[in-house]
Image (cartoon, rainbow, N blue to C red):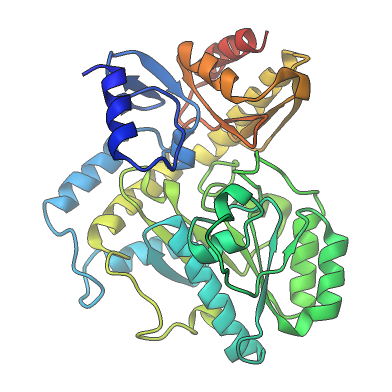
Length: 401
């Protein structure tokens, strides 16, 4: 079969809920993916940061194979020998007392929402069904009906209402508006839910005082600060958790994607005992959440992240990539934003939309993703080398000119 044959099958039999670049990938290794003709591409999306450790990392792949041949699924009706040790490893690594494992990022966020509301009613004393969770314009926390209900992306929410109430949406980065909202509604606010860096919005960083300001307001009004670290965490922004770069500690976090190195869906909600105690038997769960295969894969993925010092690599090489893009001085570039190996290159209006540039990069062996019209995201696996970045910069520069 040729590329057009696969495209025709997708068009005929698959829902049209994505608009991917027209490349049919067949295998991958490290920072490279290969199409059905054998052409090699530098992966500069890393499956939305799910493969921070690189494609098919041998240690993670070995853990998958070994556990799949031993015990894959028990459900949480029974215990298994991988669950407790993994929760201990994750808890100690990220510095939270308790772990609640799920499968996808959206499930982790839904878990955070349920935890925040139940904590608000049982601990803070918010009247039943009156809890508020503050969210922000440009957010992307998942695709469930609850989550898209507080999205400001009309493509994500149009046609899916009516939506769940209780999620006031405020401007990302405006501490004054958050403060004003707390002054008026503080007793009803259970939590603030935020991406420390907005990925889908185009790798948007908040003002330096924004997250510390949110921490102060949450402390002042007895509300939880919950950071969605599903894309930004586990090394992508140069830290285990990106919000720590702003000098704060969130009350709870959601993680996913790179938690499995791209080989299995694994996510988690982490918090301290005061928050996690609201979950009792029967209040929340998942058939696959915490299964032994997920635990084995995620444990290996964390070991790779730590043993190969991928957070430090991301910070150092990200700065190099960022400076290399700036040094090109292209008049088509309006702004280069980012932290670690997570960069948003925003094109000027005169340059036109980003999609054709991504298609041109594909022809030159680089796979990157456009977002919000005029932004190209660069997020390669954290195992990329300086030499590979320099080679990519040459191709990016030629496409921009």
